[in-house]
Image 1 (cartoon, rainbow, N blue to C red):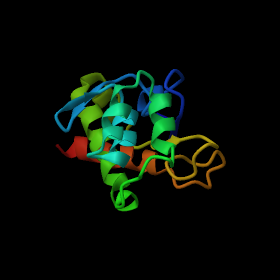
Image 2 (image 1 turned 30 degrees about the horizontal axis):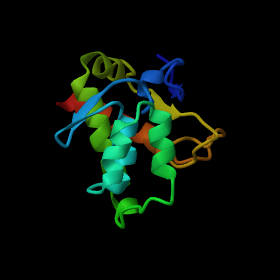
Image 3 (image 1 turned 90 degrees about the horizontal axis):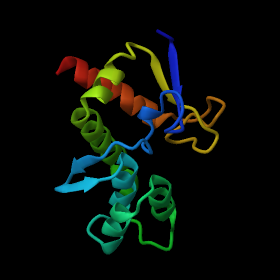
Image 4 (image 1 turned 135 degrees about the horizontal axis):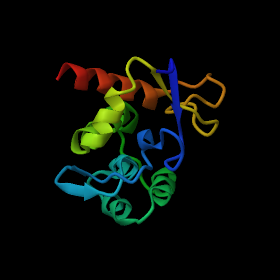
Length: 147
């Protein structure tokens, strides 16, 4: 088992860990095409934007819509975004047995979203980023082990 497992694009090695990976989730009484759809839509929870994002076909489009600052971002977003992400990850890995097994099979490896495109959820491409997605996946892995 490698010490570090990197992931980024859904169609590439370890891409199942990406929020763009095509694993639908049920959360909040609705079915979401991907965890990315859910995460981006929650930036506008309780508004028509939430449903608009849920209905788009591709996670890339959901991400673009979620980043569009013409849409009114919920006031508490910075305070709740990690909880929202963890909720999405819990749903994804609890609702897909194969994904849960895959995550548990990573052992104690450090999980890293390796991309220059994101220094918050990812590693910034050079390791300087916060890698919060990787840390939340490792936190979830511990929860699943202890369940």
